[in-house]
Length: 139
Image (tube, rainbow, N blue to C red; front, side, top):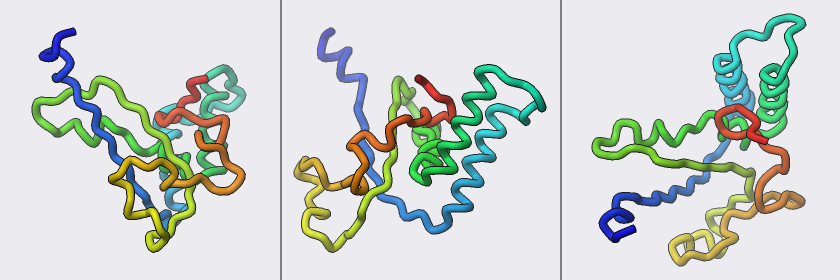
């Protein structure tokens, strides 16, 4: 690829720390979103879609970070920006210990890793078996 071809693509990195002030409201909204995506459950209906829905619901009930991630859509962030088209997106969430007064929180610009630390006992990738953030389990 020439420089002209590669310069058309831009990687935009955004990091946010959000405070969950009402976990029940967050979880409820995530569950409503899942219900809208999958439709109302049909009594006695099984299959892959029903399993995916149950997994998505269980995941957002168990973890506020996953509930939040299921509601975030990168397309919404750029859909109104003229002259750009979303080519690819990925995102994740995790619960962290947050202390803005702690040493190191101001150093986000210097490229240091580890400023956003998972809770004790959690691995760096989050919570293991996660739901893709469109509410569907992608494997």
